[in-house]
Image (spheres, rainbow, N blue to C red):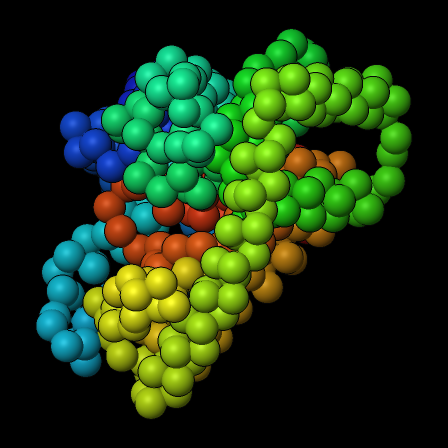
Length: 387
């Protein structure tokens, strides 16, 4: 009885952390719930044989932890050959990320997956509502939802990523609970996604949804009609509000920005090639002036950042995580869990043109990369018995 109650106690602070992290990006006070869950997990693993045995015997999950651990340790140690060492900080962040993935797995093993996903979904919906409340309504189409809710992600592209991820999480919740009412907030998320005027999250969502559909094509007529209706209503609202021209101008600006981003990528590759094997180290940033005269320090691509900081070795470790995620996707597919596949495809697509690096204290990287990775690494519990 004590063992069961202890595991339940472990779950609640983790669920609170997930919920609040979606709303308050990078706010350190939220992390107290993660630290509580971390401490309880370590204590449970040390003192309770049931937890320890289940952890050690989780054959499909342990390789994922091993590959992820190798990635985290390597990039932490890369601080040793960086321009300035941040070894202690990097190791701490890596340890937190490692435990985060373990905590998600423990939640699924306890049958609490729908609650963790629900916490993330509820947090994103809350963030969307708060953003719409705080945003300057007079300039809502010009500001792209910037300068709205003060605790939202700093980058409006990341905010769009939250909205896209939330839409996919709704599909997991509907399947897990058999309650279609979880689709009700999706129009709010989709509206916010469109208002960010960010192509990356939209394209990632389209590709992720397409891949999931092609895995096991099944046509849900009601869902299709509902989606088309929502898109038509949003399109009509934009048309009659006279904001279509703003979106067209934004698309033209985005096309010009794409050319500038290509220049950043070329520069990043040239710098990375100077130390191609092991990279420049954990804290390396670019020093590049783009076509607009702006000083750029980020690569605007997770994969190029990995090459820059960790070299070919770092890229191989990242590729190892992605390949094992693909292996786990087959296990999810066997259980007809297509939404989980869509989530990881969304994350991998999103970071092609976004981000600098993903090892940090809890902030948007945890939501947009590590949570999808934890979801895909944690295969359905029933399938564990089949392997």
